[in-house]
Length: 357
Ligand SMILES: [Zn+2]
Image (cartoon, rainbow, N blue to C red; front, side):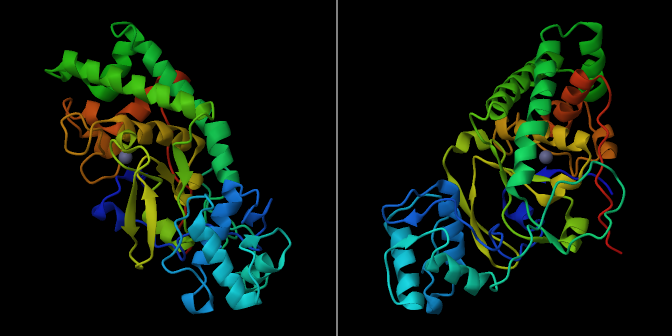
């Protein structure tokens, strides 16, 4: 399977997303650590679960109209939505959902089918063997994301750090050889200017990955939705990044999926897709550098935007065709350079064979 990477969040890209069954990542039975609502602890994760769950309730059954923003914050709208649901379904309202309480039980009964379901994704071994007995559907779980932050992020940061260090002596043998291998710098008439761009970009990539690896900042978040095996087999999109996403702090965009479901994308986040977890470890590490390169580059269309190769797939054969002038503006070149700078070998990418047939 060819390795695809990512696309920015605009119309063209949304059309290429797999269609989620539902625009959230709830796992049933829903459970809460602490209470949510009026005078409650209101932990953000618990609150998000309650907001997502209420959004799945039809208006005529007491669901909120319009849907709640899933922001993890309990405000008047979330409290009112809990009350409305309780009044309609339970005949009382205290604007509060308690762990083990009647309101949570009712939510589970209405949207969880009253039955426990298994979490729909797990971590997969970084092999290329086809999956044995694959489940029908997958979503990105908290456990998956924990792996991103605890395993792949520190490795990606090491790669970016190695790149920055190497570029402090750009005329050393190792730096020159890697600069020519991936950026074809010796064939670039604007080599001095573009070496500056490469250094500047790696500097930003390194600083942001450092903050993420230290868990000070969380740029990478799970893509919502449940994905069928067939979606994964045809998509191959590992992550979704808004170009120059770093400039969009706190902003959100409304996205309509092909199945007409709507959710809000945080423009300053990078969305990790389920497909990501079917890649080799190398691919998972390299993808983080690749995505952050888009994220810290200039905005789309600007001369120094960090883009994908024509065709939007970062396959090695597409990379090989790039001219020296294009390479410093291609995310995958950053990923390959940084990986080899740290590990001393080429990134060995590839996805599991996802073809179910
Ligand atoms: Zn990309």
